[in-house]
Amino acid sequence: MSLLDSTLFALMVTGLLHPQDAASDHAQLAAAAREVINRTRSLDTLKIDSFCPAPGERFKGVVIFGAGPALWDSREQTRVEPARILEILEQIDGSGFYDWKAVYGGNSEGESAVRITCQVRLQIGALSFSVSQRQKGSQFAPLRELATAVIARAKSAEPGTTASSLPDGIQKIRTGELAPETLELLLHRRLADVSANRGWTLRLEGRKARLETYDGAMRNRAGTRLNKGQLRELTDHLARAGLSSLPVNLYNSQYVDLKVTVLNQVSNVQARQFAQMSAATHGEAQRRFDTLLEVLEALKISLFGDH
Image (cartoon, rainbow, N blue to C red):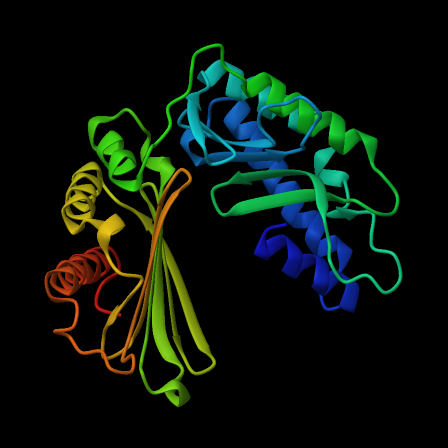
């Protein structure tokens, strides 16, 4: 379940959000879906997630982007033609999806772990809704039928594209073999003074960018998109940074977390004032990391201003 959906569900349970408020959001999503179907809204605003493991199936789920890329278990990319994407959206639209509950099933008494066995999530622009099936409790067959149908329709007879390493994935984005949507980047920076509780988080999913800044209890969020030139420049810098060869711990006077993902290839770096570590400890690797941080901060300012 997405953070938004789990929050909405919790608010409904506690009575802070009335069911009619959620119904209004679902009505807006349904209206947006019909705009996409009627070609009055861009397919590029669409994202569909379907997860439903089945015996004998190679993949557990797929994420379909309106621009065409389909990511299978974050391991392989294929492409789905626009007409097929519209067929999938029409099937969701006609299934009664917007009237379903956010969660079906539950845990046995005393159990804390939750296992999701099936899920469909539809996102159009800023609007989204997901429906999840838990392993225990009542089972909602229409959700499984829809999830498996989405996965089946998205399948391609053509072999998919993979990334053998993070450098390989970044290079394939640069050459167009992999879509920009296969790239995810998260950069979190927080002041070293924990009591200040001040910092920001930049998230990139392909060309989509989101920034969250926080100062104490105050939080601000903004979203925009990278242009093609900005994405090309970013991937050039990621390639030069040699992410796969960076130590997992580096030096910074603040708290910095950087995560870069292409499909299932991941690089994680934490930079802090670690004990017995200085800016000189890791030499050339530290310099590559610092250069990349400067690039990412410049990109943040270019996209969102000097927050």
